[in-house]
Length: 70
Image (cartoon, rainbow, N blue to C red; front, side):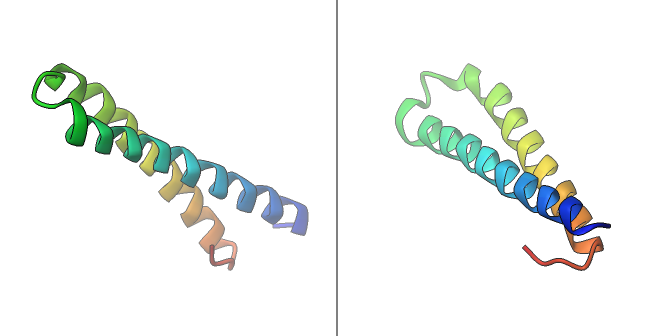
């Protein structure tokens, strides 16, 4: 993997981590501020949070496979 590809992947990992953190924050806000009234929002926010975390984990594994630690 070239240096440019690694830098691009590092940038992608950082972006995906930020997105996962934003979804986690939305989940936290739901739990802390809007439950039990907003219980119907749980599946959508939970799935989006899971998907965002999975995307970050997958990209982070690719980066680790390239010999780079995030």
